[in-house]
Amino acid sequence: MTDMQRMDVPLTVAGRTFSSRLLVGTGKYRDFDEARAAIEESGADVVTVAVRRSNLGQDPDAPNLLDVISPSRYTILPNTAGCFNARDAVRTCQLARELLDGHNLVKLEVLGDQKTLYPNVMETLSAARTLIDDGFDVMVYTSDDPIVAQELESMGASAIMPLGSLIGSGQGLLNPDTLALILEHARVPVLVDAGIGTASDAALAMELGCDGVLLNSAIAHAKQPVLMARAMKRAVEAGRDAYLAERMPRRQEARASSPTRGLITE
Amino acid sequence: MHVLLNGESRQFDDINTVAELVERLGLAGKRIAVEHNETIVPRSRHAETELSDNDRVEIVHAIGGG
Image 1 (cartoon, rainbow over the protein chains, first blue to last red):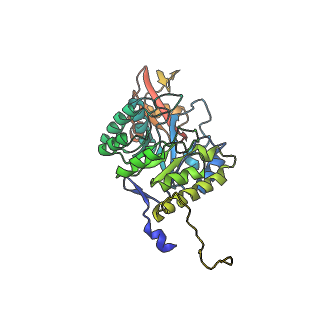
Image 2 (image 1 turned 60 degrees about the vertical axis):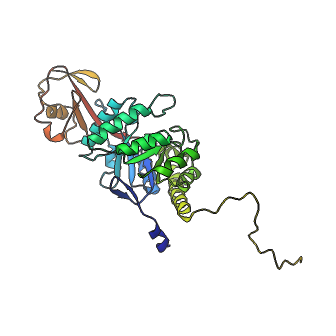
Image 3 (image 1 turned 180 degrees about the vertical axis):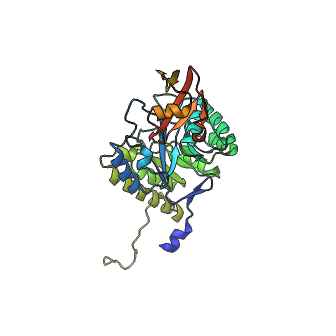
């Protein structure tokens, strides 16, 4: 197995190398303990967080997420979730960079509306340009549009992250063909971000040739998040191996696996 | 002094700088980030950044998200 593992190269985003191709969120868990256990079991190196106003009325000594998910152990990927225009997303990233002592890797998402949480591509492109000019390494949540993916890549995005289906919907990959089109041309990592519902969805994304998968709800909203975290870890590894192994061709007709000679009925 | 803090109108007495505001809120040394009138204030400049009446201040931290 060691030789085979050498055939693969680790996921590298903006010069940073990660041992896992599974990236996970920290939202929607019952408590910090559950989040910590699930994230540990997932084997993820990259962990997303949101940036929000501090609750100034509350106990300032209450535990902080970054005490539980330590930036010394994980690569923290702040997101711009909840931003509906480029300006808010850029401000959020700038706050995140200050929060994380100059760490400049961010997940940009600029949403179109509350109902679909579908990316607003125009605002996303605008924010991406501003952030890249400001020295950020930007992983971009976007629609599964190959032309937009190329546009983002040519402006210097560090990773393209098309949705598999709507955020938090768990519908899996609704359009594997467009993902394949993006993968065909991309020269930066492509990660499916959003829509993964269960392990087979993550495996399929990897089998298509995606460089990684980013998910949150599929683990956090499973009845047993820690067990699902392990399933996702294995699914991403299995899907990656299957991609590298190059699957057999599909055929319309049957082809026997056992010899057709020497049967006792001959 | 009157400050629009995280979108809420707040009154503070005897406060002149971002560092003093952070201290007053019990957030000194915590992992937060501060924006003053939509400009980031690096931690190293909290002490020298002076507040004026009706300034807008945002104080944020990291929470769970996907």
